[in-house]
Image (tube, helix red, strand yellow):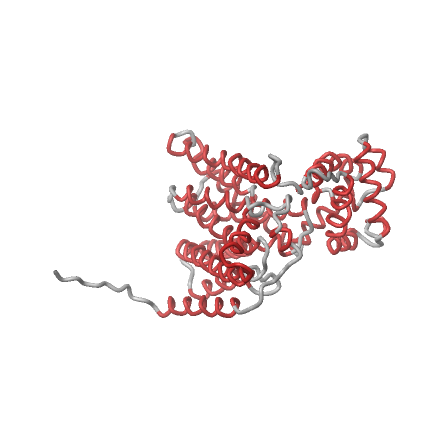
Length: 427
């Protein structure tokens, strides 16, 4: 019998990409792991950490022993480079990018690996959440715009993994559902579409159940990850006044508030202590978020609810208290809250004009999709929704540092490319 081997011709461009990947991997794998302030809480399976990254670290420690940090960095590098390649090839083929635009997209996708973020070397959840996010968006694009409907199953698996790594991305499912409704409109209740719609609706329920099940197994409480409202309460605490203690009927809430207020007041971390406009006030909040949240309210709450028989209950009770205190402080200082919240959103966009640009794109493409759902309008709408929703959610929960908003830099680039093509076609 005769056998023939067929070799696919490798282009010079493919060799260039391969060399770039190898060069990036070799350079960063020999850089030291970064032990961020969050690393210890992941490794210790703290109750307020989503399950995937703590289990990921523990798994590598089990396999590689005391030297597992280097193996973690190597895996994160391989995972992010592989995910970049999937996203890069998908977008390059879909938009038919020329070599210059490919280089720009490639550089943007690689940016989070480099300083200041160093996501692959940092022993924190971004080492997994960034590559998972790229895969998620790539599979979503396949499902919505390339008629590869089976990719919804890959999307579902990656979504669950991502949502159990960083909770800020739960909004993606409602966005996909909305786009699916726009795309199929009156035909959405056909069996072929309805099964995907039902799967998407079930995803958050499945994710929350898995999250609570993990916490029941590890922390003995069937609850989803606490800390959402503890984070969200930080801005209302920053703009609070001492008299706000009268807002709380619950004695525990009143006591925790007064102790927290006394501490942040002594540190000068109240907006009333800051001279200047809302930008100046926000900058103080931005620079000192951990002191107001983690080292003040959270620590004080956990100390107040401390239970020697249950070391995790205090974190849960503190989260419950934050959830109940949040609306009271929000109503009392709504104007200041909205002003500082808006300032926070603008800080994430670096300029109000960039924010307005994406809002206009979102409205324009959304109206176009109502008339006709196609690749260009759909991608513009999808990208702008991802960018705006993430920025708005982050500003509620935390301060808008780059660590929380870098995920959609590539989507911003895609929007600019699509707009450039639209302008070229109209000439």
